[in-house]
Length: 139
Image 1 (cartoon, rainbow, N blue to C red):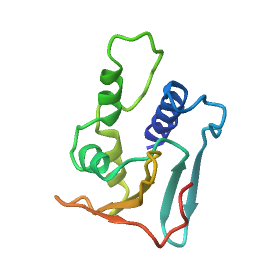
Image 2: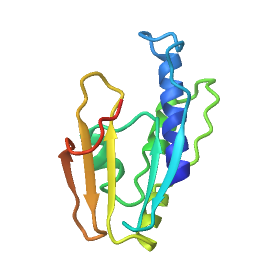
Image 3: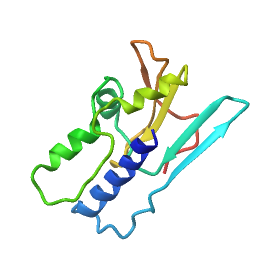
């Protein structure tokens, strides 16, 4: 999960410096925080990465062995970009279910006007995606 967070930070950095609308100077420093709450029995991994849209949540988290990182690297094609991202197999995320009964992903895409979303699953064959208004807003 930490490698997924690192990939999200790297992807945001890459997209920010290659975008026509950004010169990369206002880019926040990449950050990953790991927090635990013994009483609630939770582990929270937060990153300042690219975030995901509803479609990306469905495609990247809604299917086992589906890798958004791999698709991103493939989309770069034969260019000379030096991108070395870790999560290219699409199964690392699901290791969370080895220790958790439920997984929640709260995210906000860096695309303009994107809503904050929450993806939730208990490792059954289904998941939900909803707009998240209860938690702290993601900047």
